[in-house]
Structures are given as C-alpha cells and as structure tokens.
Length: 293
Image (cartoon, rainbow, N blue to C red; front, side, top):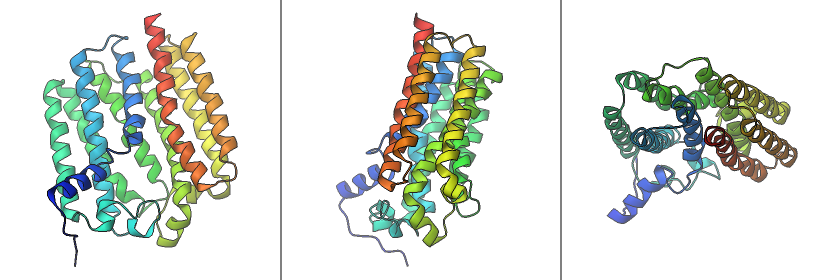
C-alpha cells in the first residue's frame, strides 16, 4: 500500500521541483552543450534564435521528464541508497502516479515545441521519447544502462540537424557516437559512487561490469570520444586552431580526472562526474571561436 506524507501545496510544488532535478542542473548541462555543438555546426555558426530557444527548452523539459520517469522506475530502491534516499518518491512526499503525470506533462510540453520545427524533427522525436522512457528500466536487465543513457543524451544531436533542415550526415554521427562514449565514461564515474549499494540491491551498471578495470575503461572511452569528436571537427574544417586547442584542454582534464579517481573514492568519483560539465562547454567554445574568428 503506497503511503504519502501530508503536505501543503507549497511542499508538493517543491517536491515536483526536486523530482525534476531543477536544483541540480548538471544533467541539463551535459545534454545542452552537445546539442549546441550540433546546432552550431549544422547551421554553419549562425543558428536561428527561434530554433536555439526551442532546442534549449526541449533539453530542459526532456531532461526533467527523464528524471521523473527515472525516479518512478527506482522508487523501490532509492530509499536504500544513501545518495538518493531523500528524493521525493523515496520519502513519500509524492505518489508514484504523480511522477508519471509529471513525466507525461513534460513530454507534452516538449511535443508542443515541435510545432515550431520541421516535420522531420517530429519523426526523430519518437526516438528521444523511446530512449528516455526505457533507460531507467535497463539497469534491471543489463549491465549497460549507461549506454542507453548515452544514446538518449546524444539524441538531440541528430534532432538539431533536422531542426535546421539538414540531414544527419557522417559528421553528425561522429558527434553522436563521440558524445555517447563520453556519456558512458562520466556516467560510469557516477555509478562508481553507488556501486556498493547497487551490488547489495541487485542493480546493474557499467561500474559493476568493468570491475577493477573501471578507471582504465573510462579513460579509453574518453579517448574514443576525443577521436570521434575531433574527426567531426576535422571533416567540418573546424579543428585548427581553436577546435584542437579545446580538445587538448579536455584531454588534460580527462587525465586530471583519472589521477583524482585512481583510488575510486566515491566522493571524488562524484566530483569527477560533475566536473564533466566543463568538458561540453570547452568543446563548444572551440566550435564557436572557429566560426567567429
């Protein structure tokens, strides 16, 4: 029997706010910057303001929707994990069905944005919805939920191409898979923080799958991401000098993360995960400067 705490409307509104992780914008940033890479490249450095606004709101709404459905999927395990035990569904501040309604409402809001974009973007949006819905449940069935998250987080890249009337091409897919590899890397860092609890409750992750080779595989994935993104910038003639400079700064940051996380301290691994917010921004700055200068 589901029990819910008695709350005022202000407390309930605050619970929805925390359910959508609006207090923790790191997830939004990790989706936003790759979307901007694709939008700037697809529009040759001059994105239409309307499309920029629509894509930004889409990132915000769909990330929040993903958080809501994730907490719905994890509602029976979050209370047993130190980092997540204070989430609204875990504490009983809101009901599971309320999380579903929030998810559907945010998806509907995102769907309304599609009226301002080409019909091709509407078709591609079904992929985004499918990935956002299935990702939270994958950790019950596979040790690769981070791959599904990477696919979901990267889906805005081809959508950005279609939003400006471009067909996703080789450069688009290099960005997509480069971002996917980077996402698996930083979400494995995130999963290391919960590995002790996940093993106890039977939740699967790449952190468990990779075992004692986790830091090395994270480094390999980061290298793959740099090669693929660098290849996209090279083909688009955006590599020299600012694109390459940005990638070198990112490479140095990845090395710094590896050194800091070598002992696998959960708090340091969580710091490394959060530190990735700078990676996407640095790459975007490199792309932006290539078009501007």
